[in-house]
Image (cartoon, rainbow, N blue to C red):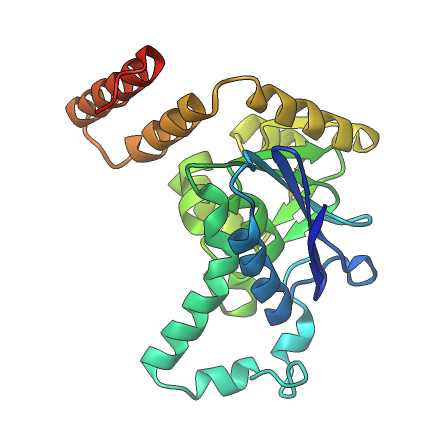
Amino acid sequence: MTLLDKDGVRLVADGAVATVTLDRPAKRNAQTFAVWRALAEAGRLLPGEIRVVVLRGEGQSFSAGLDRQAFTPEGFDGEPSFIDLARGSDAEVDAAIAGYQEAFTWWRRNDIVSIAAVQGHAVGAGFQLALACDLRVCADDVQFAMRETSLGLVPDLTGTHPLVSLVGYARALEICATGRFVRAEEAERTGLANLVVPAAELEAATADLAAALLAAPRDAVIETKALLRGAVDRTYDEQRAAERAAQTRRLRDLAGIGD
């Protein structure tokens, strides 16, 4: 069932799996402000029964980053350019960027597991969108790059936190500051990619992972994801306590005992 098809974003639900497709293949799925609004809307439209969300890009590239038209004085029709944005107050700029970030934040919700199926280029905003997902299945032709610093900017679409978590501070700094490409072998070795497969097998491998994720009871997956996401911010003893509390909830649920 198609729930959304606008501005280069398509959302389709099939049972417990939803697929979000970046659908601007002629532009290598370059992102615009309209794309970001549509991605945020897709998150709001997810039916309650959805457990796994697959994010993919139509064509040869996952996403080549932000559409370069955003950097022109004219910007996009009917949209403020970055130059217009820079003229705003600190509060206005902050609010605008917070709005852009909404397209990148909902993928880590505890009630879903998100998988980015990444092929070809995943550059800048494309890299950050892949990083927004819980898991990444990559084709062997994948090329990640964080080009913002090379343009005099910083990665501001929520990508810095997961990048450092996955590869560590020193490697994350080197990747961002140089803007170099990270290819499939390095992505798998450093943890950016959960799995690397031949490009022709990307769709099937992603579907297999989604099916495996659906095999466990939903509430157990939700509790486990919440535990793992919170682990980095807890002490060892705090994490032990969180495990005990989560397991207590699971045991009572399985036994049919309410709170």
